[in-house]
Length: 52
Length: 233
Image 1: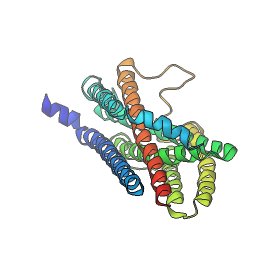
Image 2 (image 1 turned 45 degrees about the vertical axis):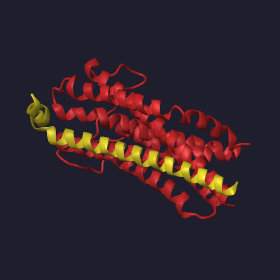
Image 3 (image 1 turned 135 degrees about the horizontal axis):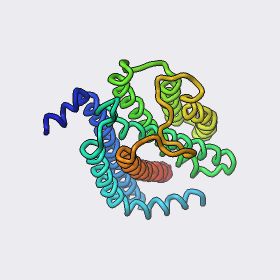
């Protein structure tokens, strides 16, 4: 069952590489954006504190 | 005055970001379950057809994102409201990634289906041009120091590049291409079985949610960056 799922009648290498590329791209993009947002928000907070 | 409206809305939506991210993840997992485990292989293409579930929504949203970008640029030309620039700047890198995913997954799908990773076919070439248009738009903002000038040039580029969208859409009808014609059309019944249409629609919904989440984060980053710039002055 598991090996059939990975092999997919010979198409597994194509299907899994396409899905992996897509999901890894999405995870990296989300992580990068979300961490950038948190960093920028902190930077703004620090700057506002400094200016007060 | 113009700056405050999206800021207020984005601040409100910012609070919903964790919930939106969680919903996106759940819909993605459901979509993946249907795409990989609960849909039949194609009678001709076999299991390689499963790539469609991640390729087609990426291509749709790549086109949709550019249309939104072009519309924002047109609105900027008409109203000169800087909020429209924020919208266009925020959607551009996300649209570029969706285009890249459509190109890469399409190429991987092409190998077992057409016997080649790439062909200078009308649909593929016009999609590659779309990717370059996105990159050019992003580079314009990053490379031009004078932001007034960058706004004008990037908006012009965004509007001119929109010519490519109908070319992509109708390329499979206008030219003989390796790429198959549209499977789902607004004007006719879809030529795809319900067992394959269901995962495709779920994955499309997941992609839309992801696009909305990323767009919201990107928009918030742009607004915070502007506030930092103003605070530094």
